[in-house]
Image 1 (cartoon, rainbow, N blue to C red):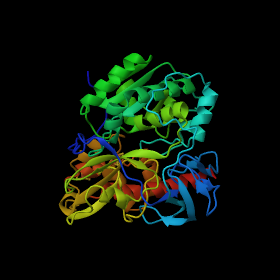
Image 2 (image 1 turned 90 degrees about the vertical axis):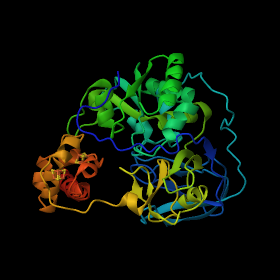
Image 3 (image 1 turned 30 degrees about the vertical axis):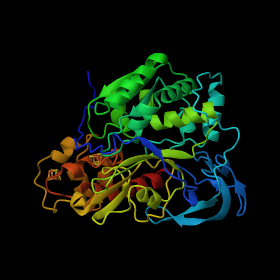
Image 4 (image 1 turned 180 degrees about the horizontal axis):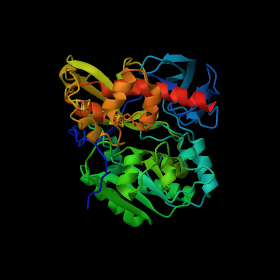
Length: 443
Ligand code: SF4
Ligand code: SF4
Protein backbone atom coordinates (compact mmCIF):
# COMPACT_ATOMS: atom_id res chain seq x y z
CA UNK A 1 0.00 0.00 0.00
CA UNK A 2 1.29 3.47 -0.90
CA UNK A 3 1.53 5.86 2.04
CA UNK A 4 1.42 9.62 2.30
CA UNK A 5 0.99 12.41 4.84
CA UNK A 6 -2.48 13.19 6.13
CA UNK A 7 -2.96 16.94 5.77
CA UNK A 8 -2.82 19.12 2.64
CA UNK A 9 -0.27 18.91 -0.14
CA UNK A 10 -0.44 19.55 -3.88
CA UNK A 11 0.29 17.62 -7.08
CA UNK A 12 2.45 19.70 -9.42
CA UNK A 13 3.61 17.99 -12.64
CA UNK A 14 6.82 16.17 -11.68
CA UNK A 15 8.74 17.24 -14.84
CA UNK A 16 11.60 14.80 -14.23
CA UNK A 17 13.15 15.63 -17.61
CA UNK A 18 16.63 14.38 -16.68
CA UNK A 19 15.45 10.97 -15.35
CA UNK A 20 17.20 8.99 -18.05
CA UNK A 21 20.35 11.07 -18.23
CA UNK A 22 23.26 9.02 -16.82
CA UNK A 23 25.47 10.84 -14.33
CA UNK A 24 28.47 12.63 -15.87
CA UNK A 25 31.46 14.07 -14.08
CA UNK A 26 31.60 17.82 -14.76
CA UNK A 27 35.10 18.82 -15.99
CA UNK A 28 37.14 20.63 -13.34
CA UNK A 29 36.87 24.44 -13.57
CA UNK A 30 40.05 26.57 -13.74
CA UNK A 31 39.25 28.03 -10.31
CA UNK A 32 36.94 27.10 -7.46
CA UNK A 33 35.64 29.49 -4.79
CA UNK A 34 34.70 27.49 -1.72
CA UNK A 35 32.21 29.14 0.63
CA UNK A 36 32.90 29.17 4.36
CA UNK A 37 29.15 29.44 5.05
CA UNK A 38 27.69 26.41 3.32
CA UNK A 39 26.13 24.86 6.41
CA UNK A 40 23.61 25.96 9.01
CA UNK A 41 25.40 27.69 11.89
CA UNK A 42 28.60 29.70 12.23
CA UNK A 43 30.79 30.03 9.09
CA UNK A 44 34.00 27.96 9.15
CA UNK A 45 37.37 29.63 9.82
CA UNK A 46 40.02 29.25 7.08
CA UNK A 47 43.28 27.59 8.18
CA UNK A 48 45.13 28.02 4.87
CA UNK A 49 46.95 31.11 3.60
CA UNK A 50 47.30 32.66 0.15
CA UNK A 51 50.02 30.78 -1.72
CA UNK A 52 49.48 27.45 0.09
CA UNK A 53 49.35 24.29 -2.04
CA UNK A 54 46.39 22.00 -1.26
CA UNK A 55 45.27 18.52 -2.25
CA UNK A 56 41.75 17.24 -2.93
CA UNK A 57 40.17 16.42 0.43
CA UNK A 58 42.56 18.55 2.49
CA UNK A 59 41.06 20.48 5.41
CA UNK A 60 40.99 24.20 4.56
CA UNK A 61 38.66 25.55 7.26
CA UNK A 62 37.72 24.53 10.78
CA UNK A 63 34.29 24.77 12.41
CA UNK A 64 33.94 27.96 14.45
CA UNK A 65 31.17 27.00 16.85
CA UNK A 66 29.10 24.10 18.17
CA UNK A 67 26.76 24.28 15.17
CA UNK A 68 29.28 24.56 12.33
CA UNK A 69 31.21 22.22 10.03
CA UNK A 70 34.73 21.93 8.62
CA UNK A 71 35.35 22.61 4.93
CA UNK A 72 37.77 20.69 2.66
CA UNK A 73 39.35 21.52 -0.65
CA UNK A 74 37.49 20.02 -3.59
CA UNK A 75 40.49 20.41 -5.92
CA UNK A 76 44.28 20.37 -5.89
CA UNK A 77 46.09 23.62 -6.57
CA UNK A 78 47.18 26.93 -5.06
CA UNK A 79 45.16 29.15 -2.74
CA UNK A 80 44.84 32.43 -4.63
CA UNK A 81 42.64 34.46 -2.31
CA UNK A 82 40.65 34.38 0.92
CA UNK A 83 38.03 37.03 0.50
CA UNK A 84 34.32 37.83 0.56
CA UNK A 85 32.56 36.88 -2.68
CA UNK A 86 28.92 37.21 -3.66
CA UNK A 87 26.75 34.14 -3.05
CA UNK A 88 23.88 33.25 -5.37
CA UNK A 89 21.69 36.02 -3.93
CA UNK A 90 24.53 38.54 -4.26
CA UNK A 91 25.37 38.68 -0.52
CA UNK A 92 29.08 38.80 0.43
CA UNK A 93 30.29 35.56 2.06
CA UNK A 94 33.89 34.56 2.92
CA UNK A 95 35.39 32.18 0.33
CA UNK A 96 38.69 30.37 -0.19
CA UNK A 97 39.63 30.71 -3.88
CA UNK A 98 41.83 27.96 -5.30
CA UNK A 99 43.44 27.84 -8.75
CA UNK A 100 43.19 24.26 -10.00
CA UNK A 101 46.44 22.38 -10.79
CA UNK A 102 45.98 18.74 -11.78
CA UNK A 103 43.82 16.48 -9.63
CA UNK A 104 45.94 15.16 -6.75
CA UNK A 105 44.00 13.61 -3.86
CA UNK A 106 45.01 13.03 -0.23
CA UNK A 107 46.53 9.53 -0.20
CA UNK A 108 44.28 8.23 2.63
CA UNK A 109 41.11 8.66 0.53
CA UNK A 110 40.08 5.32 -0.97
CA UNK A 111 39.15 6.15 -4.59
CA UNK A 112 38.70 2.56 -5.74
CA UNK A 113 35.16 1.47 -6.69
CA UNK A 114 35.44 -1.39 -4.13
CA UNK A 115 32.51 -1.62 -1.70
CA UNK A 116 33.62 -1.59 1.96
CA UNK A 117 31.11 -3.48 4.09
CA UNK A 118 33.12 -4.12 7.28
CA UNK A 119 32.74 -1.57 10.02
CA UNK A 120 33.89 -2.01 13.60
CA UNK A 121 33.86 1.60 14.82
CA UNK A 122 31.97 2.60 17.96
CA UNK A 123 29.12 5.14 17.82
CA UNK A 124 31.48 7.84 19.13
CA UNK A 125 34.11 7.04 16.51
CA UNK A 126 31.46 7.15 13.74
CA UNK A 127 30.22 10.56 14.89
CA UNK A 128 33.79 11.88 15.07
CA UNK A 129 34.50 10.73 11.52
CA UNK A 130 31.26 12.25 10.18
CA UNK A 131 32.10 15.53 11.91
CA UNK A 132 35.70 15.58 10.60
CA UNK A 133 34.45 14.94 7.05
CA UNK A 134 32.21 18.03 7.14
CA UNK A 135 29.03 16.09 6.37
CA UNK A 136 25.86 18.19 6.41
CA UNK A 137 22.26 17.39 5.50
CA UNK A 138 22.03 17.29 1.71
CA UNK A 139 18.24 17.57 1.60
CA UNK A 140 18.45 21.37 1.64
CA UNK A 141 18.94 22.59 5.22
CA UNK A 142 22.69 21.72 5.41
CA UNK A 143 22.45 21.08 9.17
CA UNK A 144 25.65 19.41 10.44
CA UNK A 145 24.93 15.65 10.38
CA UNK A 146 26.92 14.68 13.49
CA UNK A 147 24.69 16.98 15.60
CA UNK A 148 21.48 15.56 14.12
CA UNK A 149 22.76 12.08 14.93
CA UNK A 150 23.31 13.08 18.59
CA UNK A 151 19.85 13.55 20.16
CA UNK A 152 19.81 16.12 23.02
CA UNK A 153 19.63 14.89 26.64
CA UNK A 154 16.22 13.44 27.47
CA UNK A 155 15.42 12.56 23.84
CA UNK A 156 15.84 9.09 22.40
CA UNK A 157 15.92 8.05 18.76
CA UNK A 158 13.79 5.00 17.93
CA UNK A 159 14.00 4.94 14.18
CA UNK A 160 16.00 6.36 11.27
CA UNK A 161 14.11 7.55 8.19
CA UNK A 162 15.95 8.01 4.91
CA UNK A 163 14.40 10.62 2.65
CA UNK A 164 14.47 9.43 -0.95
CA UNK A 165 11.25 11.19 -1.94
CA UNK A 166 12.77 13.95 -4.12
CA UNK A 167 9.29 15.45 -4.25
CA UNK A 168 10.33 18.79 -5.80
CA UNK A 169 9.53 18.79 -9.53
CA UNK A 170 12.46 18.53 -11.99
CA UNK A 171 15.07 17.17 -9.51
CA UNK A 172 16.55 13.76 -10.33
CA UNK A 173 19.90 13.55 -8.53
CA UNK A 174 18.61 11.49 -5.57
CA UNK A 175 16.80 9.17 -7.98
CA UNK A 176 20.13 8.54 -9.73
CA UNK A 177 22.19 7.87 -6.63
CA UNK A 178 19.56 5.36 -5.41
CA UNK A 179 19.65 3.58 -8.78
CA UNK A 180 23.44 3.71 -9.12
CA UNK A 181 24.71 3.29 -5.55
CA UNK A 182 22.06 1.50 -3.47
CA UNK A 183 24.55 -0.62 -1.46
CA UNK A 184 26.55 2.42 -0.41
CA UNK A 185 23.35 4.23 0.67
CA UNK A 186 22.19 1.14 2.60
CA UNK A 187 25.61 0.91 4.28
CA UNK A 188 25.41 4.63 5.11
CA UNK A 189 22.05 3.91 6.76
CA UNK A 190 23.60 1.05 8.76
CA UNK A 191 26.38 3.35 9.96
CA UNK A 192 23.89 6.03 11.07
CA UNK A 193 21.71 3.39 12.78
CA UNK A 194 24.73 2.32 14.80
CA UNK A 195 25.53 5.94 15.69
CA UNK A 196 21.94 6.45 16.87
CA UNK A 197 21.61 3.05 18.55
CA UNK A 198 18.45 2.14 16.58
CA UNK A 199 17.59 -1.14 14.90
CA UNK A 200 15.16 0.09 12.26
CA UNK A 201 15.45 2.30 9.18
CA UNK A 202 12.70 3.16 6.69
CA UNK A 203 13.63 4.48 3.26
CA UNK A 204 10.78 6.59 1.84
CA UNK A 205 10.68 6.81 -1.98
CA UNK A 206 7.87 8.26 -4.12
CA UNK A 207 6.12 5.98 -6.60
CA UNK A 208 7.49 7.88 -9.62
CA UNK A 209 10.94 6.32 -9.08
CA UNK A 210 10.33 2.60 -9.75
CA UNK A 211 13.98 1.80 -10.57
CA UNK A 212 15.17 3.44 -7.36
CA UNK A 213 12.54 1.54 -5.33
CA UNK A 214 13.66 -1.74 -6.90
CA UNK A 215 17.38 -1.06 -6.41
CA UNK A 216 16.95 0.02 -2.78
CA UNK A 217 14.69 -2.99 -2.05
CA UNK A 218 17.37 -5.37 -3.33
CA UNK A 219 20.01 -3.56 -1.22
CA UNK A 220 17.71 -3.58 1.84
CA UNK A 221 17.50 -7.40 1.70
CA UNK A 222 21.30 -7.60 2.06
CA UNK A 223 21.37 -5.33 5.12
CA UNK A 224 19.36 -5.97 8.28
CA UNK A 225 16.74 -3.59 9.65
CA UNK A 226 16.04 -1.66 6.41
CA UNK A 227 12.62 -1.34 4.79
CA UNK A 228 11.71 0.57 1.64
CA UNK A 229 8.37 2.39 1.87
CA UNK A 230 6.67 3.24 -1.42
CA UNK A 231 5.01 6.65 -1.09
CA UNK A 232 2.32 8.38 -3.13
CA UNK A 233 3.56 11.24 -5.28
CA UNK A 234 2.57 14.34 -3.38
CA UNK A 235 4.38 17.59 -2.59
CA UNK A 236 5.88 18.31 0.04
CA UNK A 237 6.35 14.64 0.94
CA UNK A 238 10.07 15.30 1.54
CA UNK A 239 9.37 17.76 4.37
CA UNK A 240 10.64 16.08 7.55
CA UNK A 241 7.34 16.46 9.37
CA UNK A 242 5.35 15.16 6.38
CA UNK A 243 7.69 12.20 5.88
CA UNK A 244 7.49 11.16 9.54
CA UNK A 245 3.70 11.37 9.36
CA UNK A 246 3.60 9.36 6.11
CA UNK A 247 5.92 6.59 7.30
CA UNK A 248 5.36 6.12 11.02
CA UNK A 249 2.09 8.03 11.45
CA UNK A 250 3.41 10.35 14.17
CA UNK A 251 2.98 14.15 14.25
CA UNK A 252 5.78 16.51 15.21
CA UNK A 253 4.24 18.91 17.77
CA UNK A 254 3.99 22.63 17.04
CA UNK A 255 7.42 24.22 17.68
CA UNK A 256 8.75 20.69 18.20
CA UNK A 257 11.53 18.74 16.49
CA UNK A 258 11.40 15.43 14.59
CA UNK A 259 13.24 13.77 17.49
CA UNK A 260 10.12 14.47 19.64
CA UNK A 261 8.50 11.64 17.66
CA UNK A 262 11.53 9.35 18.09
CA UNK A 263 12.52 9.77 14.45
CA UNK A 264 15.71 11.11 12.88
CA UNK A 265 15.40 11.97 9.17
CA UNK A 266 18.39 12.02 6.82
CA UNK A 267 18.51 12.43 3.06
CA UNK A 268 19.71 9.52 0.87
CA UNK A 269 22.52 11.77 -0.41
CA UNK A 270 23.64 12.30 3.18
CA UNK A 271 23.64 8.51 3.70
CA UNK A 272 25.96 8.15 0.69
CA UNK A 273 28.22 10.93 2.02
CA UNK A 274 28.33 9.19 5.42
CA UNK A 275 29.35 5.91 3.75
CA UNK A 276 32.13 7.68 1.84
CA UNK A 277 33.33 9.54 4.95
CA UNK A 278 33.36 6.55 7.30
CA UNK A 279 34.34 3.72 4.93
CA UNK A 280 36.43 5.53 2.30
CA UNK A 281 37.86 8.48 4.31
CA UNK A 282 36.41 10.91 1.77
CA UNK A 283 35.25 14.29 3.09
CA UNK A 284 32.31 16.07 1.47
CA UNK A 285 33.95 17.66 -1.57
CA UNK A 286 31.47 16.97 -4.38
CA UNK A 287 27.75 16.42 -4.96
CA UNK A 288 25.21 15.47 -7.60
CA UNK A 289 23.49 18.36 -9.36
CA UNK A 290 20.64 18.21 -11.89
CA UNK A 291 20.76 20.88 -14.62
CA UNK A 292 17.34 21.08 -16.16
CA UNK A 293 14.54 23.10 -17.71
CA UNK A 294 12.32 22.70 -20.78
CA UNK A 295 14.10 25.51 -22.61
CA UNK A 296 17.50 23.75 -22.44
CA UNK A 297 18.56 21.57 -25.39
CA UNK A 298 19.55 18.79 -22.92
CA UNK A 299 18.91 18.08 -19.24
CA UNK A 300 21.67 16.34 -17.27
CA UNK A 301 22.87 15.04 -13.93
CA UNK A 302 26.44 15.97 -13.02
CA UNK A 303 28.88 15.02 -10.29
CA UNK A 304 30.27 18.45 -9.41
CA UNK A 305 33.18 19.59 -7.22
CA UNK A 306 32.01 22.00 -4.53
CA UNK A 307 32.97 25.59 -5.35
CA UNK A 308 32.31 25.31 -9.10
CA UNK A 309 30.70 28.43 -10.63
CA UNK A 310 27.04 27.90 -11.63
CA UNK A 311 27.97 29.35 -15.05
CA UNK A 312 30.09 26.20 -15.71
CA UNK A 313 27.05 23.97 -15.15
CA UNK A 314 25.06 25.96 -17.66
CA UNK A 315 27.94 25.93 -20.17
CA UNK A 316 27.92 22.14 -19.94
CA UNK A 317 24.35 22.00 -21.27
CA UNK A 318 24.92 24.46 -24.12
CA UNK A 319 24.72 27.82 -22.32
CA UNK A 320 21.80 30.00 -21.30
CA UNK A 321 19.02 29.92 -23.92
CA UNK A 322 17.73 33.23 -25.25
CA UNK A 323 14.26 32.70 -23.82
CA UNK A 324 15.52 32.03 -20.27
CA UNK A 325 13.88 34.38 -17.78
CA UNK A 326 14.80 32.92 -14.40
CA UNK A 327 17.54 30.61 -13.12
CA UNK A 328 16.93 28.83 -9.82
CA UNK A 329 19.17 26.87 -7.47
CA UNK A 330 16.97 23.93 -6.42
CA UNK A 331 13.42 23.14 -7.49
CA UNK A 332 10.58 25.45 -8.57
CA UNK A 333 8.71 25.21 -5.25
CA UNK A 334 11.44 25.96 -2.69
CA UNK A 335 14.50 26.86 -4.78
CA UNK A 336 16.27 30.23 -4.63
CA UNK A 337 16.73 32.55 -7.64
CA UNK A 338 20.34 32.83 -8.79
CA UNK A 339 21.12 36.49 -9.35
CA UNK A 340 24.86 35.93 -9.75
CA UNK A 341 25.97 33.13 -12.08
CA UNK A 342 29.58 33.42 -10.90
CA UNK A 343 28.41 32.31 -7.45
CA UNK A 344 29.61 28.77 -6.75
CA UNK A 345 28.03 25.48 -5.74
CA UNK A 346 27.84 24.53 -2.06
CA UNK A 347 27.41 21.20 -0.25
CA UNK A 348 23.61 21.32 -0.39
CA UNK A 349 23.29 22.41 -4.06
CA UNK A 350 20.95 19.97 -5.77
CA UNK A 351 19.82 21.52 -9.06
CA UNK A 352 20.00 24.39 -11.48
CA UNK A 353 16.63 25.03 -13.10
CA UNK A 354 16.16 27.37 -16.06
CA UNK A 355 12.64 28.69 -16.65
CA UNK A 356 11.14 30.87 -19.39
CA UNK A 357 8.99 33.94 -18.78
CA UNK A 358 5.87 31.93 -19.55
CA UNK A 359 6.84 29.32 -16.96
CA UNK A 360 7.55 31.88 -14.25
CA UNK A 361 4.56 34.11 -14.87
CA UNK A 362 2.24 34.35 -11.90
CA UNK A 363 -1.50 34.81 -12.28
CA UNK A 364 -2.51 38.49 -12.02
CA UNK A 365 -3.36 39.24 -8.39
CA UNK A 366 -7.05 39.59 -7.65
CA UNK A 367 -9.15 39.80 -4.47
CA UNK A 368 -9.49 36.79 -2.17
CA UNK A 369 -12.60 34.86 -3.14
CA UNK A 370 -12.62 32.93 0.18
CA UNK A 371 -12.47 29.58 -1.56
CA UNK A 372 -10.35 28.03 1.21
CA UNK A 373 -8.07 26.23 -1.27
CA UNK A 374 -4.93 27.59 0.40
CA UNK A 375 -6.00 26.15 3.78
CA UNK A 376 -6.86 22.79 2.18
CA UNK A 377 -3.39 22.67 0.58
CA UNK A 378 -1.39 23.70 3.65
CA UNK A 379 0.43 20.58 4.95
CA UNK A 380 0.86 22.23 8.36
CA UNK A 381 -2.87 22.81 8.90
CA UNK A 382 -2.48 26.61 8.86
CA UNK A 383 -4.81 29.24 7.43
CA UNK A 384 -2.61 30.99 4.87
CA UNK A 385 -5.22 33.59 3.86
CA UNK A 386 -5.48 34.72 7.50
CA UNK A 387 -1.70 34.77 7.99
CA UNK A 388 -1.37 36.83 4.82
CA UNK A 389 -3.96 39.31 6.05
CA UNK A 390 -2.32 39.63 9.47
CA UNK A 391 1.11 40.09 7.88
CA UNK A 392 -0.30 42.83 5.65
CA UNK A 393 -1.79 44.58 8.69
CA UNK A 394 1.52 44.12 10.57
CA UNK A 395 0.02 42.17 13.48
CA UNK A 396 2.84 39.83 14.57
CA UNK A 397 1.20 38.91 17.90
CA UNK A 398 -1.84 37.49 16.14
CA UNK A 399 0.38 35.76 13.59
CA UNK A 400 2.16 34.05 16.47
CA UNK A 401 -1.17 32.89 17.90
CA UNK A 402 -2.02 31.49 14.45
CA UNK A 403 1.26 29.48 14.61
CA UNK A 404 3.02 31.17 11.70
CA UNK A 405 6.30 29.65 12.97
CA UNK A 406 4.97 26.24 11.92
CA UNK A 407 5.01 27.39 8.28
CA UNK A 408 7.60 25.31 6.39
CA UNK A 409 7.58 27.75 3.43
CA UNK A 410 6.61 24.97 1.05
CA UNK A 411 4.64 27.27 -1.27
CA UNK A 412 1.57 25.00 -1.52
CA UNK A 413 -0.74 27.92 -0.65
CA UNK A 414 0.78 30.15 -3.31
CA UNK A 415 0.65 27.34 -5.87
CA UNK A 416 -3.01 26.66 -5.27
CA UNK A 417 -4.51 30.19 -4.90
CA UNK A 418 -6.81 30.95 -7.87
CA UNK A 419 -6.65 34.69 -7.09
CA UNK A 420 -2.87 34.81 -7.59
CA UNK A 421 -2.30 36.30 -4.13
CA UNK A 422 1.41 36.26 -3.15
CA UNK A 423 0.60 34.49 0.11
CA UNK A 424 4.03 33.06 0.89
CA UNK A 425 5.90 36.29 0.13
CA UNK A 426 4.02 38.16 2.84
CA UNK A 427 3.85 35.21 5.27
CA UNK A 428 7.66 34.93 5.06
CA UNK A 429 8.09 38.60 6.00
CA UNK A 430 5.58 38.28 8.85
CA UNK A 431 7.23 35.08 10.06
CA UNK A 432 10.63 36.79 10.24
CA UNK A 433 9.06 39.57 12.37
CA UNK A 434 7.48 37.03 14.72
CA UNK A 435 10.79 35.16 15.03
CA UNK A 436 12.52 38.43 16.00
CA UNK A 437 9.95 39.03 18.73
CA UNK A 438 10.28 35.46 20.01
CA UNK A 439 14.09 35.74 20.12
CA UNK A 440 14.06 39.04 21.99
CA UNK A 441 11.53 37.57 24.46
CA UNK A 442 13.92 34.64 25.09
CA UNK A 443 16.82 37.05 25.77
S1 SF4 B 1 4.00 28.01 2.73
FE1 SF4 B 1 3.42 27.88 4.89
S2 SF4 B 1 1.32 28.62 4.99
FE2 SF4 B 1 1.75 28.15 2.82
S3 SF4 B 1 1.08 26.04 2.57
FE3 SF4 B 1 3.25 25.91 3.10
S4 SF4 B 1 3.28 25.69 5.32
FE4 SF4 B 1 1.22 26.39 4.78
S1 SF4 C 1 -6.77 30.27 -2.03
FE1 SF4 C 1 -6.56 32.46 -2.45
S2 SF4 C 1 -8.61 33.11 -2.96
FE2 SF4 C 1 -8.85 31.12 -1.96
S3 SF4 C 1 -9.11 31.60 0.23
FE3 SF4 C 1 -6.95 31.32 -0.09
S4 SF4 C 1 -6.17 33.39 -0.46
FE4 SF4 C 1 -8.39 33.48 -0.79
